[in-house]
Image 1 (cartoon, rainbow, N blue to C red):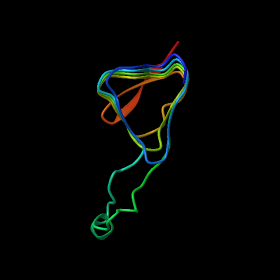
Image 2 (image 1 turned 60 degrees about the horizontal axis):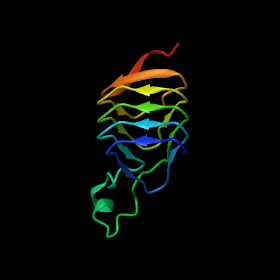
Image 3 (image 1 turned 90 degrees about the horizontal axis):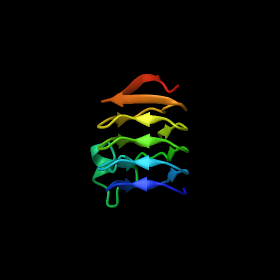
Image 4 (image 1 turned 30 degrees about the horizontal axis):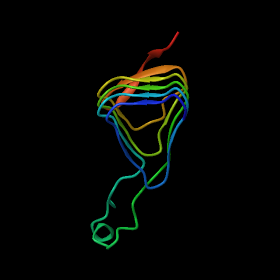
Length: 111
């Protein structure tokens, strides 16, 4: 996206990570669209490991991801939403909400 601020973040994509306009991504944030390795031992030992679960990540317009948060596969962060620092996000965050914690949970609506 345009006008995106990123401070020392890690993006690891096997499928897709979409960042829309006016998004802020704090220092040390990690965004992963996959599990890196298969869960089953025998599949994990395949070379290469072709059974990795993945799902696109989308950070919508004006979202703010707090420092040291982790965004996991298949997650969408809603328009103008905020993810508190140090959160682990494994579920979609609706538009206009603040989520925080490990695992990230709803805190409140943005007024």
